[in-house]
Every structure is written in structure tokens, then in C-alpha cells.
Image 1: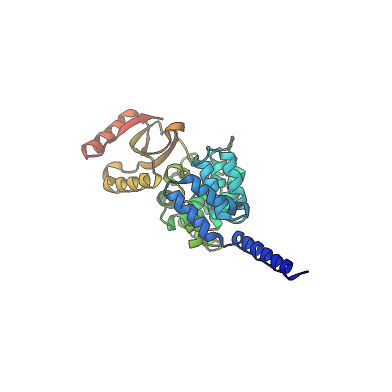
Image 2 (image 1 turned 90 degrees about the horizontal axis):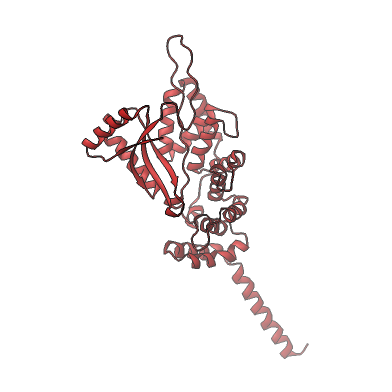
Amino acid sequence: MTYPALKKSLWFMVILWSSLSLTSLPAKATVADGVYAYEKGDYQKARMEWLPYAALGNPNALYNLGQLSRMGRGVEKDYTKAREYYLRAAEKGHVGAQRNLGTLYYFGRLGEVDYAKAHKWLLKAAKNGDARSQLMTGTMYYNGEAVEKDPLKAYAWISLSAQSGLGNAKTSLDKLNGAMTPEDIEKAKKLIPAMISRQLSPDDVGLMVKQPDSTAPKMAEITPPPAPSKTAETPAPEQTAGITADDNYRIQLGSFRAEDLAQKTLDNLQEKFADIIGNHQGTIEFADLGEKGIYYRLQLSPFQDRASANALCAQLTQAGQGCYVLKR
């Protein structure tokens, strides 16, 4: 080979090596640039930043593209496409993708509800330290959704979730504390240390599109069975999550586009009007209104008849809190 030819060959190798080096750069910088563009509202630019890294299997890029498809930002809303991205990221251990994949199955976003697949992915995310998944996993154990009912596991998972500060988890834990015996609670607490495999690291969160307030999954609520009577009476049937026989009417306190704002408002109202609300349960009702968007409705329940609901609503109104009564 002549010198000019050798020189030309060397230059080609340098250019090729440079090109390969660019494709193998750490994903953090470019994925982070995509998150920055997303937060600025430039969803198309964010998508273009993430696509090449998703092609290389970067789990954060895959998760973020799933978020775009789930929310319809920069692309058409497509739950099936979101599932594809989430699944690829979830199989690589991405906690947010595991959680969101589970919620797609739990809430039937892909057609029919599939509790078995929901539990599979929510349990993985719960073990990896995700508080929302811990609450939903605990709820599934309490209700017997895809698994046998297990109050001890339910308590353990919900307790873990409550430790992170999640408001719905604290409410559910309070109910379980009032319904379970001290002995069972102690047994449940002993399960906790072996349940967590790891906690979310800063890198997991820093390169992820935040779960948007208006599309965060609704947390299933728990209504524990009543405490056993001290007299020998026929035991009341166990209650599960959802509408009870006495839940004919509810009081609505407000409606929000952001779940965290709804939860914060609910916590404040329950503290401010504790004497009026009494034993009534504060809940956040998830409402998907299609083109109008997703809303989170603050409600109090249960009320057996409209008169009792109207009476409490009148007390709240007199105290300065607007409300109205609705029939289930």
C-alpha cells in the first residue's frame, strides 16, 4: 500500500471511530436534554432526542417515549404503543415503566382489565421501592385481585407506601390499624424488611419524565371490615374496595386536574374540618372525560341518604367550604 493510500485509510478509520464514539456516548446527557425540552413543552424535540437512545435500548429513553404515547404529547395518544415502550424498559428493570405498565393492565387501558399482568408488574415496581406500586399491590392483596386475599401482606405493602408520605396510603393504613388485631399487625410488620430489593436512585428519577399530574393513575381505596363485636353476634360480611351498600350519596368538595393538588387539598380539608367530617372517608375519584381531559374529584362518603349528605354539606358551607351532593 502506498503512503497516500495508507494515509487515506487512516483518515477513514479516524472518521469511523469518531462516528462510533458519538453513538456510544453516555445516555445521560442527551436523555437529560430531552427531559429539558419536554419540560419546556417542546415534545417533538424531546422525542427526537430520545429515539436514537431508545433504539440502543436505553431504559430511560424508552420510558419517556412511553410517556409521550400514553399522554398523546407530540404524538397521537396510543396506549398500545406506550405498552411497547414500557415493556422494553420494564424488562431492563426500569421502575417507573414497571409501575405504568401495571396500571395500564389494572385500569383496562388496553381493553379488558388484566389483574394478573397488573400484579406481576406492580409487584416488581413495589419491590423496587415505588410507593404508588406498593399501595396498589397492598390493595390487590387486600381485595384478592389476581391473588388470594392476604391482610398481612396488604398491611405490609401499604405500610411501606405510607412511610414515603403518600396520602392515600396513610388513609388506608389508618383503616387497617383500626380493623386488624395488634397480633396480626405485628406479624405484618415482620414481613416488611424482606420485601424491598432496592430504592429509586437519583439517576432513575433525574432522567425520567415526571408522572404528569393529570395522568397519574388512580389509587384503589381500601375499606377494611368492621372491628369484631364484643358480643356474640352474626359476623358482618367483609367489605372490599369500591361502593358499599350505604354508599348511595357522596359530597363533592372540588375537582382538580392535578392529583397531587387534589391530595394536598383533601389532606388540608380533613384536618381543618375534622369535627364536621367525623368518620366519613375522604377519597379522590378518578374521572377520564375523554377530550375534556382527566380530573381528580374530592369526595366524602359514604352517605345512605340524601338528607344526611345535605346536612353535612350545609355544615361545611356554613364553615366556608363549598360543596354539593351527588348520587352514586
